[in-house]
Amino acid sequence: MSQNVDNIQPSYPLFRTDEYKDSLKNKRENYEERHEQEKIDEVFQWTTSKEYQELNFNREALTVNPAKACQPLGAVLCALGFEKTMPYVHGSQGCVAYFRTYFNRHFKEPVACVSDSMTEDAAVFGGQKNMMAGLENCKALYKPDIIAVSTTCMAEVIGDDLNAFINNSKNAGHIEQDFPTPFAHTPSFVGSHTTGWDNMFEGMIKYFTRTAMDGKQVGSNGKINLVPGFETYLGNYRVMHRMMKEMGVDYTLLSDPSEVLDTPADGSFRLYAGGTTQDEIKDAPNAIDTLLLQPWQLDKTKKYIKDTWHQPVSAINIPMGLAWTDEFLMKVSELTGKPIAASLELERGRLVDMMTDSHTWLHGKKFALYGDADFCMGMTQFLLELGAEPSDVLCNHANKRWQKAMTKMCADSPYGQNTQIHLSKDLWHFRSLMFTNKPDFMIGNSYGKFIQRDTLYKGEEFEVPLIRIGFPIFDRHHLHRMTTLGYEGAMYILTTLVNEVLTQLDKETRGMGTTDYNYDLVR
Image 1 (cartoon, one colour):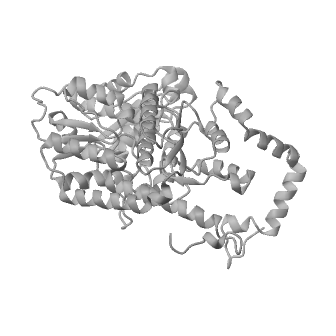
Image 2: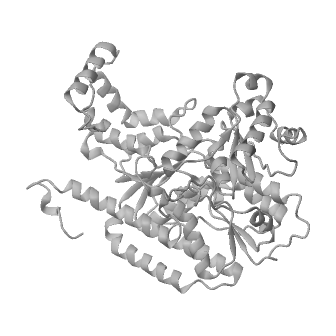
């Protein structure tokens, strides 16, 4: 089965050649203990039924594709947002390989992160020796200005104490006493990637400000702080910079990985690029206020800023869509005394024009969605503004307060009267809903493609197309550079939604002489 050097084929067409089809057929017939196709189809059809959905929603002891990632993943992303910071994971090498690979596949960039590679002996005796050697090697090899330490399951289960281990490493001379080593305990078996981001951010600001509050005074630097939370659309960092600059607002974006995760191909490798500086972190308590752009995932951050920095942490929603971007900009204007820029007013007007142009195609369309708490809430709010109908909204790792707020938001809109909010559910639950509730589209990350494939297997009339907005996006390129926040982000989301609707319409009306009476040139 060798390839011809003059005709090298990638795997997809190669595996469709006769010799590969014969090989796979032989493997299936002679080596696989496979059920008959009739039995497979029988079970498949049952899993699409209302009866199965009820059983599925009653299970308690099993999670199938949880629609979330683990805490250390979020901690790594948070650390990457600070200048010359090396994320350091106290745990096994395999865990760090997973985090790096996950981000590699989403951002299509190399992602720096080190591990102290705990193995069986460390699991029995503790990982302090690994920590001592790891910190020393990390500093010597990669020359960071900050090493941000988080943990994995192994270290948490055996009870390793990061504060003690780091201090012991410094006392033993492996790194200098004053070398910045913020840390966070991030057990993978509780919470999610958003919890890990919150824990690492709290660890970062606590390290640099907890014992340095003397002389700090709220409002003395005239700035506002913006905290993005677990944010993987790089355009969202850039749109925040742009909007603040257009308003003439003095601000600090606390954790900004947009440069290190989007470095140019110009012949120079950048291990570090951009990020929030240590001076900006230390000055952050002097700001007028700190706005949390994803407030439902930043509980520890909010508490620390209120209790230690004594800032109000004014309540806002994630600035997605029209109304909540309005709310965000008006809050910034209120806090800083700066008027909303005329350029942003024009941008808002263009968004309203786009919504007017497209509302006839989006009105009444049913969308099911899944993802993180703030993303789901912001997307649902914007769908309601567009006259679309969110049918099912699923978030695995939100809390009951979020569920209550979502339920009220949907109940207050004529387009949300039939919306169902699903808490602590996974993508196998979501799969059931796609068969029994049958929305027009689903919105979520790349994992939804397998659900779309299952719905299509039942028949074309049952297919629920996936619109890829969220994290991770593995199977499409460059979407991580897009923007979902602000008026600009709303324009991108609107463009994506309406064009997916029109693509599906073309697909359904392109039958020659059968359905093509609606195969229109002008939509």
